[in-house]
Every structure is written in structure tokens, then in C-alpha cells.
Image (cartoon, rainbow, N blue to C red):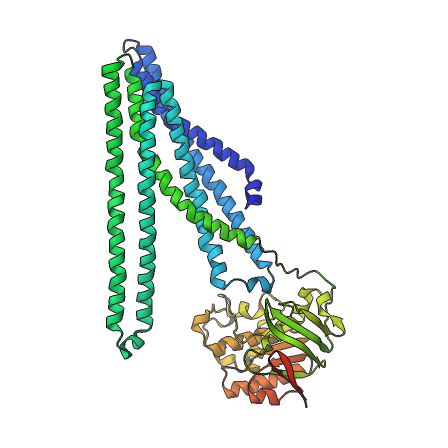
Length: 539
């Protein structure tokens, strides 16, 4: 954040100057009016000049405010654009171990809601606070310029108004937060009752749920009453303070010091009346600042993460092929040991199945082969080369992967398959789709490959077939299929098995699978148990 502010330092200084100028002009209206009231009414030329000045000040003020707002909005929009860009690019450079620290909703919230909170901090809150603070300071200075004793009375009134505004605005904000929390509880309860209505009826939980909801609604009502009372109390109390201050001024003028000019009296009374709104705004926005600062801290936490993945560091190897060898490989997620002493060899061109119960480390084994996660000890060799010394970019270009949970972009079917590789033609896609039995699904799309698809409108099997097309069309020396035939009918599974057999004639194939048909049709089966190699079966 500091680097972004430093980058925009000049424009921020210009913003500060424009705010000061606009506020001085805004506070100068009563000062000009004071001079008009104090002037000898017979001095027509001077009176005309002052009215002209008053008119010019209004015009300049309108221009200054418009210029100020324009400058502020442009400057802050640029700062926020830089912040969004910096945060997104920083997150995109993380390694998988760093991603592991956060869940997806947490990162998404930082990039959206927290950025919006920071946006409101710079574009709204800070601007309002700065404008109002400068405005009040200017008013106080002008009051002392007019008359010191009247200014003291006026300053006391402003201070008392500030205290009242702070106390009640703080209480109103606290009540509002509690009300919002209660509303969140209500929404959760509504959602739970709606989504689990069968459970509610089957176990007769209607009465219990009603009591729970009514209790939450009653609690919300209590705080709403407190909120209404405190909010409605601010205005009459502020008006009372203003009235007392004006009364004291009039008593002082008419009973003690009748030499004070009418213009000075007008000036101080005007400022006392005009101080309430900016004071209320300041303390209201200060409550919002706390929320924005929390968002800024959460964003800074992400920006301070140092776990970066440099995909271009290491030895360049465009054609990575050969035997795959694991030598006493150990891997763990933080303190959780996943793989221990893994050693085996996969011959080039073989089709090998990694088998075992859920959670034994099968997918993790594929992840470390693609260098998504670092290994703790041992070596992984491809063609005799240690993959830790090879560029990550080259490793992943030589490996084609299909996961058990396919990810689909909100884009056209074609773009989901080629993923930016324009060398893949429509004809190649259609041929591959026919070979795996996907042509019937493809023909259902009115626009064919140009159809824009959405994940929630496709079956899991269709998603998996799209991911399979993606993998086989990005030709590679090594293919990794993670549960490639799960959620697919037997006929389609048979076609995929034949296609995998054909791929295995030209490339090395690693299959993570549970199905007996997949396991039996392999050159080698590596069984894992408790993060270790339990048994290796050669065929």
C-alpha cells in the first residue's frame, strides 16, 4: 500500500491543496456577509463591491468544489485500480503452499468486499472527514478573526456539539452493528430452515425453530428501539446547545459589550449553526474508518505473503521425456506428513496405475510430480534430470493433467478446451470428441464449439469429458489422469480406456484410479498405504 501511495504522491498533494482551497472558500461566505453588514449603508460603492465579491466567491466555490471532487475521484480511482492490480498479480504469483493457508472465499473476499471497503475509505470516508475537519478549523479561525470573546463562546458550543455527536454517533453505530449481526443470524436461520425443511418436518422441529427465530427477532427489536432513541436524541440536544450559545452571545452583546458589530454577531452565530452537520459526519465516518482499516489490514496480510512461484527459474528443457523415478521422496503439508520414503520407477511409454484408499497420497504424488508442492527430501527424476532444477513452466508444458474435479471457465466450449492454444483446430476437437463419445453432447449445443457453457448447467460426466478433451488435445510426453472414468457410463468408459491405451503407445501415462477395470489394464500397479509404497505389481 505504501508503494502505491508513494507512486501517486504528487496527485495526493494536489488533492490536499484543492480540499484546503475549497474549504476556505466555503467558510468565507459568512466572512464576506460580515463585511457587508458592518459597512456603512450610505457607502454605495463599497457595498456594491462587497456584493460583487460575495457573488464571485459563490462562483469560484462552485468551480472549486466541482474541481476538487473530480480530482479526488480520479486520483482515488487510480489508486484503487493500482491496489486491485497489485493484489491480484501478487496472489497469482503464490505457490500452492501459500494458497493452502487460505480458503477460496477468504481470498475472494479480499479481492472484492475488502477492496470495496478500502474504496469507500478513500473515495468517501477520508474525503468527508478531511473536508469537514478543515471546514471546522477554518470556521474557528474566522470566528477569532471577528471577535475573540464571541469566538470563545462559539468554540465552547462547537466542542460541546462534538462531544454529543461523538457519544451518540458511537452508540448508534454500536446498535447498528448488533442489528446487522442479528439480521445475519436471521438469514442463516431462514436459510437453514428452508434448505433442511424435510429434516424439520420429519423430526418435528417446527416449534423449536419458531422459538429460536422469535427470540432473535425480539433481540433485534430491542436494539432497534435503542437505535431509534439515540439517533433521534442527537438533533434536539445539538439544537439546544446552539440555542444556549446564541442566547449567551446576545446577552453578552446587549448587556455587556454593545460595541461588537452586527457582522461579527452574524458570523459567530452562523458558524455555530453550521457546525452540527460536519461534526455528525466526522464521527459517523470515523466508525466506518474502523471497518475499512480492518479490510486494509487483511489486504496487507496477503500482500506480505512471500511464498512465490517462479515458473521461469531453472534449467530450460523443452522436450522432457524418459523414465520417471522417485527416490526416497518425502512430502508434507505443514506438520502433516503425506508421503514417506516413496521410491519407484515408471518406464517411458508405460501405463501405470497408482491405487490405494482415499487419503493415502495418490493425488499428492501427481501434484509433486508437476511441482505444485515442494518435496521435503528425496529426488524426482525424469529422463535422469532432477525436476527441482528444471523450469516449472517446462515441466507443466510436458505434462497433461485431468483432475477428478474438472474446472470449467465461464466461456465458450472451444476456449475451455484449447485454453489459449490456437494451434488446436476445430476439426481436431471434433475428431477427439467422436473418439471418446462426446460428439452427441457436442451436437446438442446450438452454436457448437462457440456455445458459452456454465458449470452448473452441465452434468459431472460432461464436465469430466470436456476436461478429458482438454488434456488429450494438449499433446504431452506425460499424461496424468486422476479418476478419469468416474461418473461416466460403461460404454463411454470403454472408449476412454481404448483412447488411453493409444496415448500410452506414444507417451507415459499415470492413472490414479479405484475401478478394477482401470487397474487391471495397466503395465504396472503401485499400491499406496499410509503415505508409503505398500506393493508394486508388474504385468
